[in-house]
Length: 351
Image (tube, rainbow, N blue to C red; front, side, top):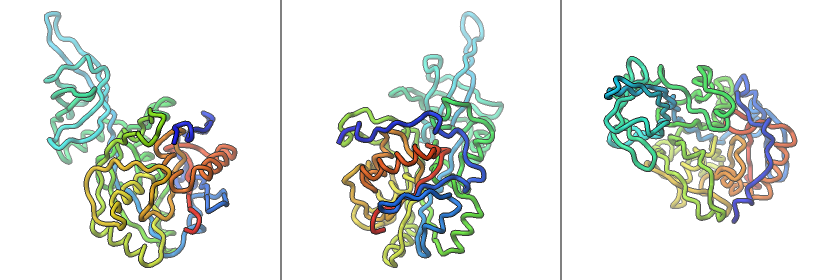
């Protein structure tokens, strides 16, 4: 299975840099078996059934991009350097892993100040990442980070424009709860309160799980034989209640439909023994054609990068040829791609 099997031509003008307003007005490509229908997210009740269960990732994106200064006293007097930091993940010892630019301008033991309230000490460097120890913890840290930080927009948006205050709302789901992600579960960005109310009234059920999306989600695949690719690990949790809800839907004949590839990867990680169960830990599950899905019946997701692991995931669910035709239709019809783009509802034959 070659990397080139997952390539396609994507016009640059189809990469969305702002989301649809309102959220649920985004376009929705519905691929049901061999049929493709152009619809909108607000019309989801046309495609779902009473008794279906949507699985939602309730991670909260932190404003992980920070700009600060490092001051140093030398024989020449006080010098100052501007340091850009992208937080990657919290570590078990209470420090944060992060990317520092320029890394050579900071030495272990030196302090980077981001605001009057927030600073961090560089404790060490390994594999190009810095270990940062912040001066605040808990709610105080969250509040100071919200003030000083900017949303970590994906590289393909950040290359076109800088993050701004609007992104702090736009790049967060309406049900975000547990802080820790540095990228949004972007299919979930299409949901607003009116749509959620309409789905509940229609008889659709919801289950919340948590997967803290890491920056590794944007890492390119660099091997030609995709089966040898090593996935990054991300922390997730499926609670006892969540597992019971999903199991009840399966046994009752309803469909389990993750909203986003993050929710799908998590529930399939929790069902590797064949049935869903409570689970917590780091998952590096890699889903590509040939994968056996144990709980997922369909998937709502955005449109993904050429040659990406997420394109491989949707190909595993629908089939490679089917996904090629879906993406060809999306390009031809001008669907907006990636994190702030439009959505697809992928329903395999028989689901």
